[in-house]
Amino acid sequence: MSGHATFRIPVGATVRDLATGRVGILRAFMDPGDPYGNVPRLRTGMLAYLIPAGGGVEWTTDPDRLERVK
Image (tube, rainbow, N blue to C red):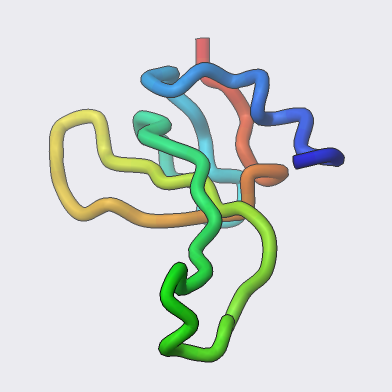
């Protein structure tokens, strides 16, 4: 997890996804790789999982593209 300063943002914090400009709640940091090896890995590294504050569809982004909203 080296290189990801955003891991200091706690799960549950309100954040801005700098890639899209959307604001949401940080739900998790996870590796999207297939743990069973059934599907070729399309991405490497971690993703941040976010959900809109009022509910809605979850989305993912690069953890380095997060900014905490105060």
